[in-house]
Amino acid sequence: MKNTVPIHGKGRDLLRASALVCVAMMSIGAAPTGSAPRFTHWIDGTTPGESETQVQRIDVDTFVIRQSVRTNFEAPFLYLLFGTDRVLLIDSGAGGLKIRPTVDRLIADWRARHGDRPVRLVVAHSHSHGDHHGGDAEFRDRPDTDLVGLQPQQVAAFFGIRDWPNTIGRYDLGHRVLDIMPTPGHEPAHIMIYDARTRLMFSGDMLYPGRLYVPRDRFDVFRASAVRLAGFAKTHPVRALLGAHIEMTTTPGQDYPMEAAAHPSEHGLALPPSAIDELEKAAAAVKSPPEIDRHPDFIVYPVEPKPV
Ligand SMILES: [Zn+2]
Ligand SMILES: [Zn+2]
Image 1 (tube, rainbow, N blue to C red):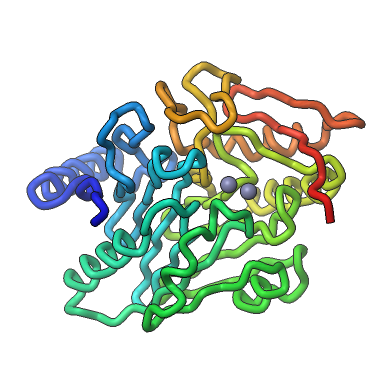
Image 2: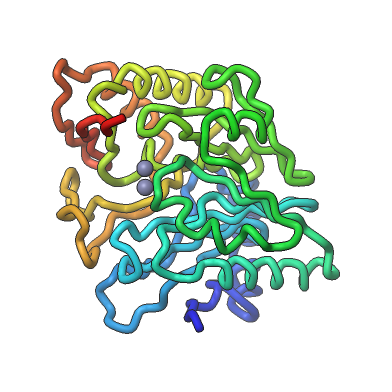
């Protein structure tokens, strides 16, 4: 049996939150599109009995699941996005727990609020590293489920990306169309997913508050992805970037030790859109040979290429 923290903002709290949002929208005359989503404190390994997963709600159709650092030091963030016909799970975790019960519970709750409407689950991945598909096996025999492959050509085929990595795929969850942008460099099958409805960019391991690992021989590919990302952001408003990990502390430029067992004083999950320009500039300025490049909110981190 896996414990989960109750969804933030349920029941009376939800009504109160909705009322506050209404008041806020009335007072400023528009949705607060410029602000990053606000989250309560994430599980961070500092509490002995913390649950294996924590769910926080961005809106009624958008959820973040954090996997406890106590189950795997990577402590990844997973995202669940509902449309009217399909629900997309971005990443299935790092293993070390059963993730599907949390996903199934969120889907059951959503369906209960939508007259038991059927919704097909799509399990996709920010990229193919093991800390992002560790739960895939749990979904293989799940009814009404598509599991997207891990190779660039499989990702391209599923999302209709015709010229990987230069063109963008469009994927409709039902009244919610996502842009799927290839961003290889950290890993060859890496994608970012842009949701025009929330103006959020789900940025995987390419851009998050932590160590942005890039194999030393892949910086040209990484740089090209950073340029394409910056170009995309010029024509698509980005409210915030939500990545797959947090490895920075609240002290600017300071990360946790590798494989830290707890993350006291953790940096926030969301990065501001200005991080896109900062990343593009950092990628353009990479020296030869590349060096560790610390920024307040992230670190560009060269690593040895994986042996073929
Ligand atoms: Zn990775
Ligand atoms: Zn990762």
